[in-house]
Image 1 (cartoon, one colour):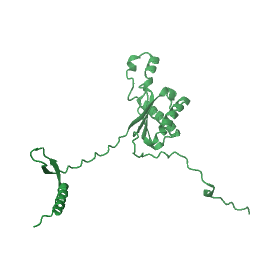
Image 2 (cartoon, helix red, strand yellow):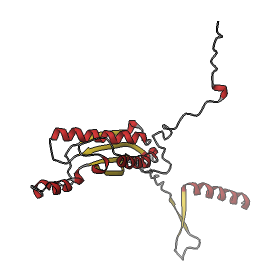
Image 3 (cartoon, one colour):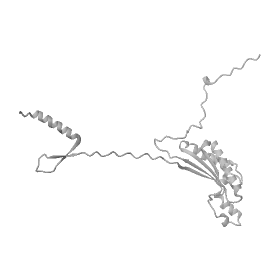
Image 4 (cartoon, helix red, strand yellow):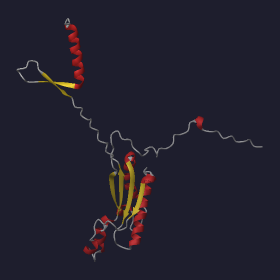
Length: 222
């Protein structure tokens, strides 16, 4: 049998290619063995799965606490001129951020002086007056929620004890309790996340072109 070096080199090259597909060559550091290698099998490491995206939660984006004394006359629920301007300012800011807003809560409060049922009714009427002005300022009615809580959630709770015989002091102490709170609930803007509220809902319809306007034919007098 005649040894052919070229065929032997081709065979060795093919074996080396096939072996490289399944094995990794690691050189030994045994200096006594020139050009010595050993082959170990390659372990397939499993791919790590990407963590699922975190869904943002609705939260309070803004909160307006309006002093009832600047909004209404004593015992009344109609907005004063000054009160209308304050609510319009808040409504303008809210309407500019509509794509991120889910709900606007309008909550009315009174002080604890007087009848509880009357205070409850007055607080709700005041919240409704503020909500109506917000709608005029561009806030959609379907995202506004009104609530009257009367003398609940007092900011200052010891006025009656501190000013038993001082009506003027009692009234001044209770001033922070008489208020209307506007709480804006929504989502912080997220890059690449679409909004869910149609921000064009309040836009006026485009004027009709002359070709779209139907002419009315008036019959001639008989």
